[in-house]
Image (cartoon, rainbow, N blue to C red; front, side, top):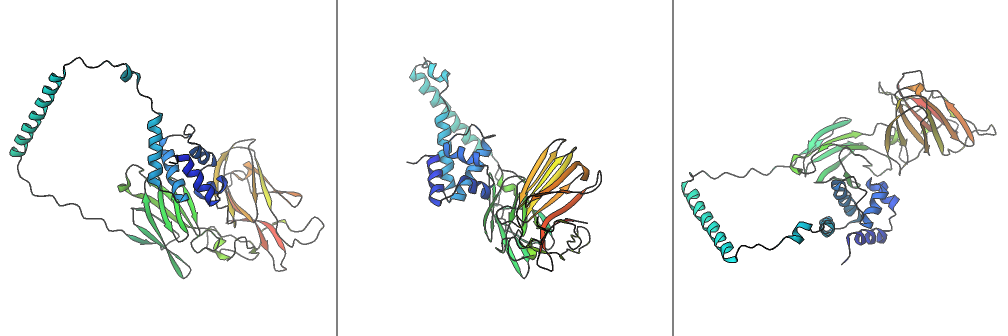
Length: 376
């Protein structure tokens, strides 16, 4: 019979998955995946994490999750030593006949007490069992929706001329959402990005705001938010954004037409005919909250945020674009490196909160420009 680690390893290798690929698609760090296959649980923060990661990893590999949990519990039982007190405990000196008599008296007393109790208890009308709950379906009529959902509940997300249905199909150590593109697994406070129409662009972000892992009946507080970038406006992932594009919706409008160019010509002075990867480098001059999100990349849909202090440094490589949010514009000294050149960026004044995109755009002459565009 295969052990827990062997089952996981065999299933992963049969599918041709690497630890890095599984880590990206399940949001489980590669070191925890390796530890599960090695049956080394010493590095996990606690047993709830072991069970949650094991559920997600097993479901991702298409294995029987309950069988995996049984194998894990069997391992834990084997690891627990027999207490020394039990090994050294001397046999009872009480004669077996006295033990038998005591047991008989207890049994007879219990039977007699039960008869008296049921005879004296007043009769009550039978209590009807609560009616089974009917699953609800909610339609998302605004850019965001937050509500408590229970197993079987679903949400309809309008996108273009179509509506896409997502269902909360399981709720345990982690919650499982069934989407048009497959299952999505979420832990508490975790966020997932979903491509609803399979065009390679992020359409919806889902956050598990609150749920009780030990009580599935309490449901889960989920937040659904339509992706607030220009990805949905272009059919192919990584497609260049026209230089005159903008979202003229009031607050948060992004105007690329007047955005200053970072890289506008090649080193030889000619126009840039094709975009190339670049790196945003930041050295922090003081305390600052900094958020960043990779744009228009199929395999990188993560958003990150972190507090930085003086002398901290950060490098963010990207293919097509990066969205940044800075709590203090002068606390972050930024420069862009690409094509053999380094160009400094000016975001704003001290204490100014800035949200901006650094992305490739395509001008009317079919030349590429890497621009800095602020959200106003």
